[in-house]
Each structure stands twice: as C-alpha cells, then as structure tokens.
Amino acid sequence: FSSAIVCASCAAAFAGLDVAAAFAGGAAFALLGAALSLAVSLRSSAVIAGMVDAGSGGDEVTRKLGNPASFAALLVSGVALAALALLWNTLVVSDKPQPLLGFSMGAGIAVFLSRVGGGIFNKAADISADLFSQAKSGFVEDDPRNPLIVADHVVDKIGGSMGGTLEFIDCILGAATA
Image (cartoon, rainbow, N blue to C red; front, side):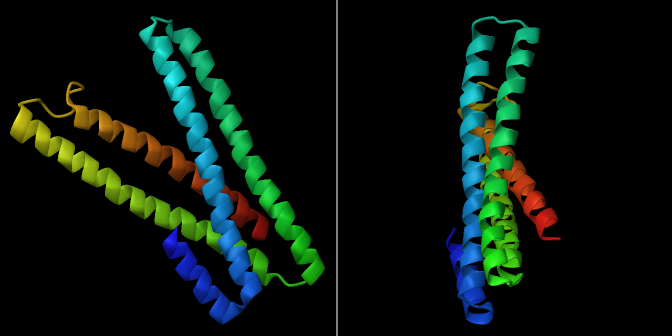
C-alpha cells in the first residue's frame, strides 16, 4: 500500500491533486473489494471443510460452493460500480477526464503490486515447504502431514482469491474508462 501512496504522490506532482486523489481512491476501492472477496472466500472454505469433515456428499458440497462464489462476484461488482458512480459524479461536475483515468490507474497499480508481492511470498512459502520436506522431515514433496505444505496451500488460496478479484475490478474499471 505504501507503493501506491508513492505513486499517488507522483501523480499529484505531475497531474494535480484531483488525479492523485482519484488514483488513491482507485487503489483503495480495489483493495476493499479484494478484502471483502477474501473474507467471503475464507469463511466459505471453513464451511466447506466442516461439511467434508462431517462426511457430506459431493453433490451437497458442490451446491454449497456456488452461493459464496456468486455472492463474492456480485459484492465485488457492486464495489466497483459504486466507485465508478462516485467518480462519474465528480467527472460530470468537473468536466475533466483525467481523474477517471487516475482512478483506473490506481486500481491497475494495486493489481500489479498485489500480484508481484503475493507471488514473492507464495514462492517463499513453496520453497521453504519443499526444503523442509526433503531435508529435515523425510516427507515426500507435498505430503499433507507437513504443516508447511498446509501453509503453502493457504498462501495459494489467498493469492488466488485476492489476485483474481483485483484483476476483475481492474477489468471493470478499465472497460468503464475506455
């Protein structure tokens, strides 16, 4: 998030405060949508894991999976559209397109920095789990008894959920600014 603040400061210096505020708002709304999606994803994963642990059948689990995914998609779409509506009102009042472009750019930078940062942590978790598996514990690679493998899967889940959501928001905002 600090990198987005630096980028917004550069936007303020070169394009004006309205573009910088829109840039920061785009990054904030994108991260808000990703955080909400992640909360839904993690909560639904806990419910599904409980159902599987209790011995529920595959059809029941599959039906239960569709509801949180649909809810998260609608929630993220609502956040992106609310942000666009707020910014569109500002655009109509000021009659300048630059804040709208700054808003979309802020969301794009949030996607980029989250994907790069998440990829670094994801790779670090994967390498440490593999090294521990092979060198210290005697487990084969990706053995579910290794706690680091479980942590690696959690990092994969978080990275996939937040990254996909951020890209979805960026697509909505990019299409609206085009």
